[in-house]
Structure formats: C-alpha cells, structure tokens
Image 1 (tube, rainbow, N blue to C red):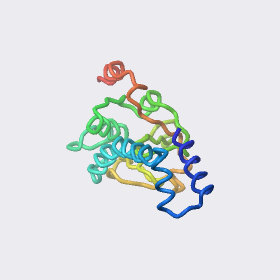
Image 2: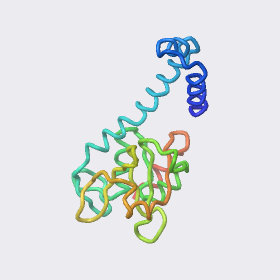
Image 3: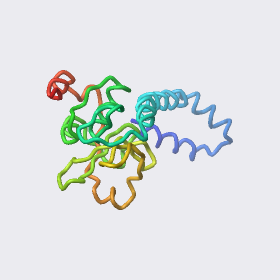
Image 4: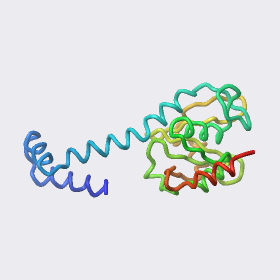
Length: 183
C-alpha cells in the first residue's frame, strides 16, 4: 500500500508539474498529505523507542549467555532485552529461535527495528543484531568487545549476512515463546 501511495504521489507530481503550493493543495485536497504524515508517524513511533533504547546500551561489554547491562550481553540476549524493554515483547533466547519466531523479509525491505542475522559460527542464524537504517545495525559482537553500531556493507558482515526478520506482535505466540524461553 505504501509503495502504491508513493507511485501515485510521484505520478501526480510529474503529471501536474505545477508550483509547490499548487501541488501541496492538490495533495491536501486528495487527503494524501494526511495519509503520508500518519504513516510516517506510525513507522517512527514504532521504531524510535526501540532504536533509542538500543543506542542507550552502546559500550556494554559482551558476555556469553549475558542478558543484562549489569553483567553484559551476548547478541541474542541484547536483542531480547531491547525488545522487552522498548516493546514489552519477550523474544526467544537464542538467535536461531528468534529467526524462527519472526517474519521473513527481504533485505531491501529492512526498516529500523528489524532483526538482521549472520552466520558467524558456520551455522545459520548464529548472530543477530537490530537494524538501524542506512545499512547500519547495532549488536553485541564477541568476547572482548562491546555493544556497538556497525555497517552491514563491510566485507565481513556482507559475506555472512543470513537474512532479515520483522518482529510483529501478531506473528508471535507470546505465552509459548515466554514459556520456551525459561531456563
């Protein structure tokens, strides 16, 4: 729907080629400006809390099996904590389980807050991070490192990219996930 809206918007702009005030009036008359603003607000609201929460943990050390800022995070513990704090959603504990519990999306459709997966241990979905936009993601990388932002275009990450997933409330069976995540 959003793509169709953008195409309509571009076609309208090209067809009329009128001054900006007239174009704005035309879009307003058709109710398109309000729709665009509502959509932008919805997307921004959905991701801004998540991204700002994640960014607040930059510098927290990596710890295998870790799931708190006090003791450190591993990759999936970091993602799980961010989603729980920002969205109140309990994701599975392991990266591979997080991949299985979320909706597959194409890399070209990534939006801030989506999960990005990498093969860093010779098995699929062995590493996870949170997409921030502009080809960047935040994660807890490895022993001796800290939560940080990285570029997915860097050769190391580009070669190991395994897929992208979107977390949606209605895609998750929250009680089952919460129960399976208990130690």
